[in-house]
Amino acid sequence: MQELESLEALSNDDKACEMAAYHKAKRRYLGVGNGRIDELVAQWRAARDLPDRIALAAQLWDSDIHEARIAAAKLLTQARMRPDEEVWQLITSWVPQFDGCAVADAAMIAGQKRVIAAPQRLVEVAPWLQQDNIWVRRAALTITLPWAKMNNPKPHEIEQRELVLGWAAGLVEDRNWFIQKAIAGWLRDLSKRDASRVSGFLQQYGDRMKPFARREAARLIQDL
Image 1 (cartoon, rainbow, N blue to C red):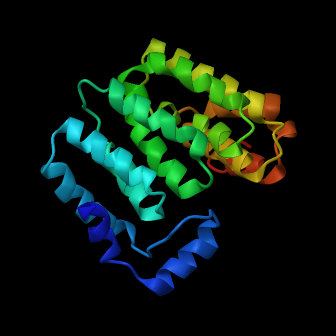
Image 2: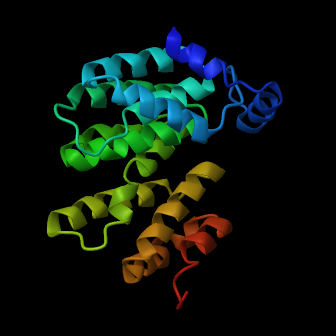
């Protein structure tokens, strides 16, 4: 596969060993940085229409090479994409395979564009909260981060934000460090736009969060 060969041509064995030790997920690493991946993805994107990009993304993901999975997600990260149902289905098919932050986050950045484009897809995200895989539970907060970052949300967007805050409330007693960090990050981002809402959340649920997460969520709020 030519695209994989292009990635492999940039491999660095020392960096690959460092990445394997850092990410811990048991797959092949090439030691290629995100900047070089971005350069390749830009070339691949420019040379293909959407169906071909979807097909390439699926092949790259299925290789189970770390950098190829990152590239697969980047190929599908685009705000305006019509039709996008096939893209959404491919992204969500990857979710059960999540086993670490980097690949999951890359895929969920692509997913963010699709749920913003069609917020009714939040109904499909909600069941992730019940999964045993902590990376899937965490992904429910990662994919919905745009709602924490809206500067002037419309009434229906506030309703959607409240839905996600309800999800976060349901996760506060999850003791996993990555889940707690995801809750804290979501709340911290929201506090830049609506500090009072985050203060209210922390007053109600903060005692049930881990101390580090509570501190991080409140870090930008002056009166907490």
